[in-house]
Amino acid sequence: MTQQNYRQISIILDRLRSAHNTGNIFRLADAVGAYEVIACGYTPCPPHPKLTKTAMGSEKYVKCRHFESSLEAVRVLRNENYRMILAVETGENSVCAWQKDYLFPLALIFGNEALGVDKDTVSECDGIIGLPMLGKKISINVGNCAAAVLYSVLARERNSKIKS
Image 1 (tube, rainbow, N blue to C red):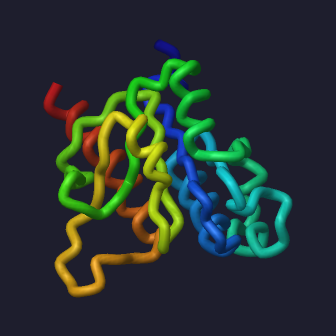
Image 2: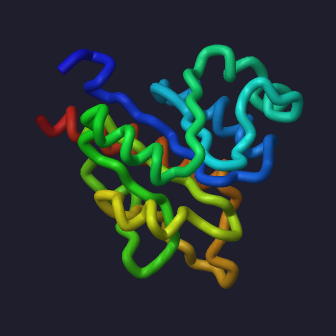
């Protein structure tokens, strides 16, 4: 396995409306060394003025692809031999992000804040991960969620290397 594939992470954004949230996730993708951001549906893609403002130049360094749907993206990644594709959702079927063992190449799907990840897409995933929600609203901003989940992946990877 190449070094790139050893820890390759693709971030799939399913129908995000906000260019500001998308730009924030581009900055995050750069910060964690993600391989790419995949924008699906009407998710804003570079070049986009609001995305560019929030991304602060990171969109120049992070690869981006666009697909009409997250389901199409998942099917393409399967053909590219991704070992694990996970939806990030809140719910009873979710495994806590910091308790999951991850396989790479890895894809994480973050959905629209109102609609979540497309249900047909979720059915083709290898599982669902989420964050504990202890309040009444059981919701946080998608950019904040992506940060917590991605850094959880990095921490789990780091801890597994220390143990071995």
